[in-house]
Image 1 (cartoon, rainbow, N blue to C red):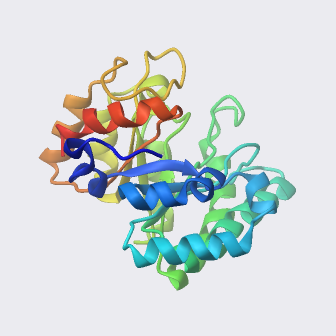
Image 2: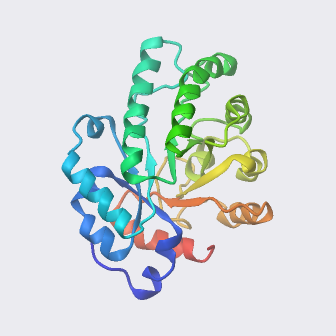
Length: 266
């Protein structure tokens, strides 16, 4: 991992997390430490089942020694924390607890989760999803409190903020908050991102910043799609919010332009 030009490496990397799967972090640890990249570590189910503990402990120790800020992103593929089927909820909670098991090593500032609501799968029955979601999240939030780590629910397929708002209000804990995902909101939300910020601003812990053309979850650098980032940051400033900012480049060549685009807002 090559160093960035001085105008990129100085300042901006200290203000943003960069999504990085655990295997890539371990493979590129020396480069991550050299440039000061602050990772949001993503754990897939397969990764969690084959954790190389000596490497993990070494990476966690070196990140702590360098005072590198870390966040986590939990697995989401095939999982459903609000599932009607008890067995599906159980395996979802198992996966989420595997991530919490790693918190004492890395001390993440926040752990991001997908809440799993999709009106097509739940037949528009938000109450059904909410009832079952509480069975998953209440014990997880209790454990998060004992670990002193905050959990953040990320909007994905939700079409308005009231769905997550109901869950956050029902749990009502300082250890459960909200992660605004700009790319998902642009594709699936029926209301402007400003309405999400207004409704959930008091819960906001983190913002995922990536762009698209509203046709697919492209994970483009900011400014290469059609998302109104000027409006989003204006709303954040108006509410005097200071969340964790995270970029999610899915291609290495998108990392530097993502940082350049974000720098003008921070």
